[in-house]
Amino acid sequence: MIKSAGLGRELALGQRKLQAMFANSSPQMRRAGELLPGDEICHLQTGWACQLRTLSNGRQAIIDVFLPGDLIGLDVALYRGSPQGILALTALTMRRVAAEDALMDLMAYRPAALYVAWLLGRRQQRTERLLATISCLDAPGRLAVMVLDFYTRLRRKRLITGSTYNLPLSQIQIGHYLGLTMVHINRVLRSLREARIVNLEKHCVTILDLERLTGLAENGGAARSLSTRVGSNSIIESARSVGEAGSQSAIAIAEF
Image (cartoon, rainbow, N blue to C red):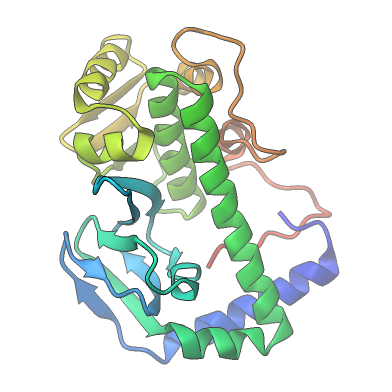
C-alpha cells in the first residue's frame, strides 16, 4: 500500500504507461522448459516461470518465481552476460518488448521511472525474504514460507479464491529454490501431510491448517524463536492480511 496520495497518483500513471507499451505487442507462447530471451521485458499473462542463477560449479539455483501478471526482465536486461536465465515452468503466454528501447522510453517519463523503481523494490523484498528464510528457518519452515508466499501472491492477483492451487515446481526445483535435497523435501512433505497442515500431491497444494502453517513459517518445525521478517513486510503479515481492506489513507497499487 502507498500512503502518499501524490506518489500513488504518479505510480498509477507509470503503470498505465507500461500497460500501453505492452498493449501494442502481440501475445507470444512458450513451451514448458524453454528459456526466455534475456534482451526483452516480458509481461507474463498465463503460466509460471522462474529465474535461474548458474553457480561457478555449474549447478543452478532458482532465485525467483514469476506468476501470471508479473513482469520479467526489468533487472536482467541491465546486465548483459549475467549467468542468469528465465525458464518457463509451464506453457505460458506473454507479451514482450525490446528491453533497451523500452527502458530508455520508460526512464524518460518520471511516473514510469518511479513505477519501475517500485516494481524492482517489490522484487528485492521477495529476494530478501527468500534469503532470510534460507538463513533462519529449518526445512519445515522454509516449505511453509514458500507455500504461504505463493498462496498470498495468487490470492492478491485473484487467481485463486480457496486454499488450493497448482504448483508446477518439481521436488528437485523446490530444492533448488529453498536449498534443500529432494530426500529432505519428500520427508518433510510427508510429515506435513500426516499432521494435516498442508498436502502437496501431483503438483496440487491444499492448505489444511493455515494457522499451523503460519506458525511453521514464523518459527520452523523446531519452534525456535526465529523470524523471517524483512523490515515491516514479512510474508506472515501478508498471509494474514489477504482479503482484508487496507487503510483509507493508503492507495493500493497493483504490481502490474
